[in-house]
Length: 386
Image (cartoon, rainbow, N blue to C red):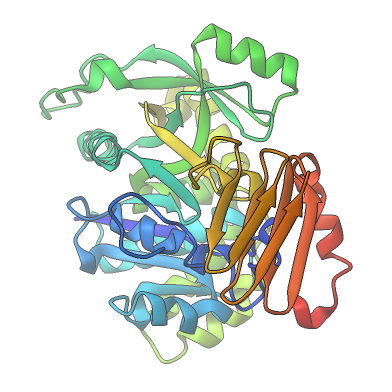
């Protein structure tokens, strides 16, 4: 059976003052898309993208245990067992391992996708088509780890990159038949590159051989656990304790005891890169895993900062973008983002490239170019406003 796990544990400090400790960015109902009557959250969008791809009973959300109530209030169709609560964040490999341990116990043939809970991805029909291809690649050959690479539109330095190797010809494996459409979109991975400088990013984009690393995957749960045992045994050992306790009265106490001891590391460093290196070396060890990428030619927006959020809002002829229930008043200037709450007027005179975010208890004003520094400001904010 096919399953999905949405990772939704981020805090979103670069979206303060809207994003708060008890109301992280993925739960903010501030994304308005064409055809929608009201704004929705990024997590709701991630769940909607699974319609027609994954049955509701096969969907899980991995998030902070402290967000459990808020997640279930917003997405009430997820019961307690389908919200995997982390007592503390231990980076992406343990979120993936947590899901793999649970799914492998419930279904030894489980194949699952890992999705992010903080992106806008369009068009959704292309997303589902390529995700389905990823599932078929793994169902055809359970050794495969499939990652999804986004065709880059500019030389971004804040994303990791995936270099495509040789195309996967027909994905034939054993007695399994060939897979339709695989030639155009599926490749072996040549290498992963973490956040290059601008000059290298330019070369990567111009070459046409690289894609942005989306942080989305498809793999078989038991193969993930096998790779963890080989490449990250410290995580594997703890996750097996959690798996043994899952479904029992001791589950929560075991998770609370074990999870904070797991080594904090990303899934790319802990699994994808070692598995890719082993596959390239070949031999008996290399045959255990096959690392592939499916290219997605679509719009992929990481809504992790106010400038990226601005891209979800239509601009007027002067480049101003307005959203929220408040009243914006802008005279002169250009390219400003104004987010305001009901009953409040935000007035700008002769301003350019500003971001103004007004909430009932805090107001942020900053140049767009300095948005990445918001984390530093957030560290100095009064605790009650975090």
